[in-house]
Amino acid sequence: MNYFNEDGHLTDESIARYVEVLQSQDWDSLPAEILDHIESCDSCHQAAMDLYAIVSHHSEPVQVTAPKPKSSARIVRMRVMRWAMAAVLVGLSFYLYRYLDRPQAIDNIEIDSPIANEPGGSKPLDEEVVENPVLPAPKKEETENPSKTTTPVPTRDVRDLYAANFVPSESMELLLADQLRSTGLEVVEPVNESVKNWKNGIDFRWTGIEEVGLSIQLENNRGEQLYEQTIEGLAHKVELDLEPGIYYWRLESEEDLLMVGRLVLE
Amino acid sequence: MKILSQEAQEREWLEREPARLLTHYQSVVEVVCQQFIARGFFQAEEKRELIQEVNLSLLEGKLAKVQMHFKGTVKLRTYFSKVVYNSFQEMARRRSRQPILLSEDSLQHTPDADLNAYQKMAIQDELFRLEAILKGLAKRQHKALFNLKLFVRFLLDHLDIQFYDSPKTEALLERIKQSFFQPYDHLTDKEVYDLSVQLYNVLERKDNDGDSLRRWVDSLKDRLITLLNGSPQRSAHTTDSIKLLLTYYFSSKQS
Image 1 (spheres, rainbow over the protein chains, first blue to last red):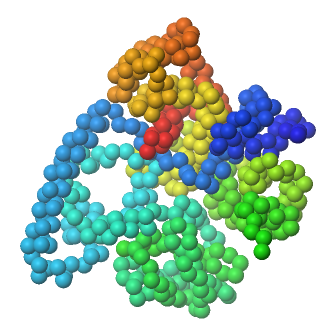
Image 2 (image 1 turned 45 degrees about the vertical axis):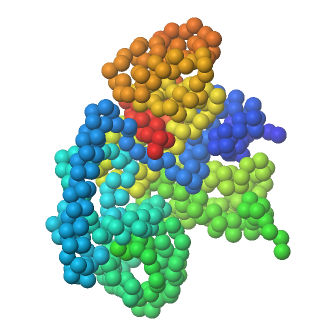
Image 3 (image 1 turned 120 degrees about the vertical axis):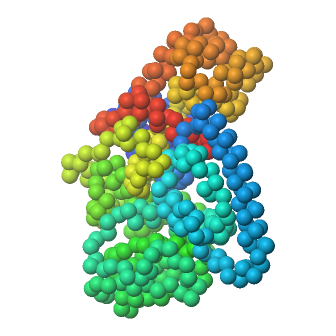
């Protein structure tokens, strides 16, 4: 079999073959000619690196995390752990005092509402993920104010139950980052990404010039399409039995993707 | 009814229904396009137009070439990814587009930095390219990874030394644990490689000094810089940025 093209470089299939061996590490299956050429030709080696990156993007992405903490960071972290444990105890006591000692208050607890005065308590989780996704490192403020995260926040509890539903979809986040073609449409409803009451349906409304054959689609954070419906006018109500989590909607015309949006059902 | 494996199904589509194959592989086209945008060759708002142009070129001739040239020694998806990559590369060349060079600055974002999805993808892309070089070292991989960790003063753990565990290396590994399982930034290169080289002298039955190991690591680092920077240039790595990239890479493999 010929592994080279007329320029003397590896064919696309030979480069693909090398990349598949990088993945499998089954070096015995790789013809020596291909390996020898890769080792001596930077151009083909770089082409293989690029292809490896593409096929890796398809599968599981490398998580970029912070460098391992040095000794001083570890000591600080130990201190934080002690503070955090003490704070959890304080938090638990507060919880028992507030929710168990006063049973008449139970009926009034709104499970979705953050406790007043909770610093950063109302910040949506997806915002946290977006702000802190790539290079997470020990947060400095945690060392300065270890009691900050200790009060039990019911919203967080609900999210913990559905943690996997709150992981943003990489591909949809990229779509959100894109500037889609100018449509002349604007979203009026939902007003915010965070939706607290969706059990009776989610109302969508846009303003602008209406196009023919509009449809709305809804998918979850795992890319599973849950809903598709043609819409009449510039309003639509999506009625679905949904769990808390991150969802993405798309507004499409017959030819184009017009808009993409994110919903955080809390 | 005939039930085909995914690969067989895709190959059948290539032969009989190339347009269907293209629809099936749209995620590949999209990922490659995003990768080119992330590396700065194109703007995000060009994405739809670029995808359309590549789809058209595939339908109008390139898929027919794939039918002719594909020998079936690899997965069709891998081969198709290369064809799509070539198409975007041609387009970048035709439009005289240059990448935004990835450098130390791009890698020095703190956790709070407001990176958009494409900036994250560019860093991830560079990590995959680095991984491709490291995995390509084949049998030299263990030695390279071990010593590159020492080069960036990355804390070692048991997984790093289990490969070398034998009665002959027991005492040496104990010293390595004492030295490199806790922060060792204060150690000089000479001190680090003088200890490390003893391990390889035992395993390879050689009598090298620490300085020869340091030179080997240094040439490996230079090779990483050359390949990652590329020709035409894709990145602007220096010794410092490579250290940063390696540290991210090792951290990602640990978590």
